[in-house]
Image (cartoon, rainbow, N blue to C red; front, side):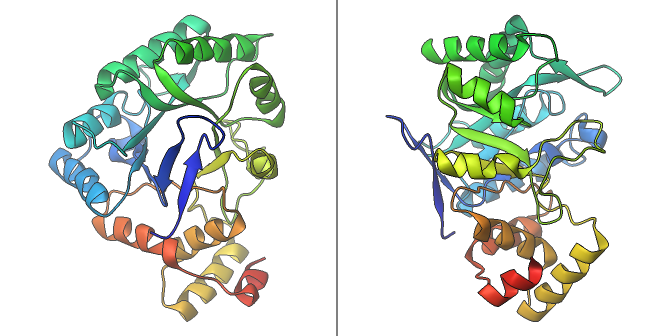
Length: 290
């Protein structure tokens, strides 16, 4: 690992996260629901990630639901002093496995308390607030509740997930924002209008850079566009690395404030993802990739 990003760089209690982090969502069962296929293997992977130097884990109480939080606690508790568990609120899962908003003030408060309980923590290091229901004032009300819980000592840093520029501006007017977690990859850099989930893209990256805010891309290994895939395959083959590694290396060359959190259920892929942080790309390779 050759990069450390500072979350909450302008605060009294910054968090130092080693690149890359690890996204836990894929450790759940099919459709991100239920227990993993092999629970012992999932626990071993989390412990191995720490042994390999990973100290940032992205999770949520609606992954599973509750599965990834409990896996992290079982695998890693008591936590090392430098371990960062980043969770998110603003969503829930229906009994039919649907993804539903859960962003009213009372709901985000319950979600924070649930994350604290499942992770066995007295304070959450980083909480990302996801997209609220589209009712007037809902975003302000929910984020204000999270700021109150931060003042209560239950949250150290607050971030945003799947945020628009307008939502970012609303949140910044209310209180500090330490990170933004949005869809971003080599093949997907702007808001995806075709997504039923309304995923926001990388429009906020330059704003985050301006304000020294960490930008955390999710779905960062997406390479569905044929032309993009062909370019990646060509450069990866010439360098003797995988396409996934090249994706991560490309991301890390875009900004010092980008912090990828690729998820995997494979130890080999975990090792490859970590090794990608040390891959250098020449100006010519970056220009070819575009």
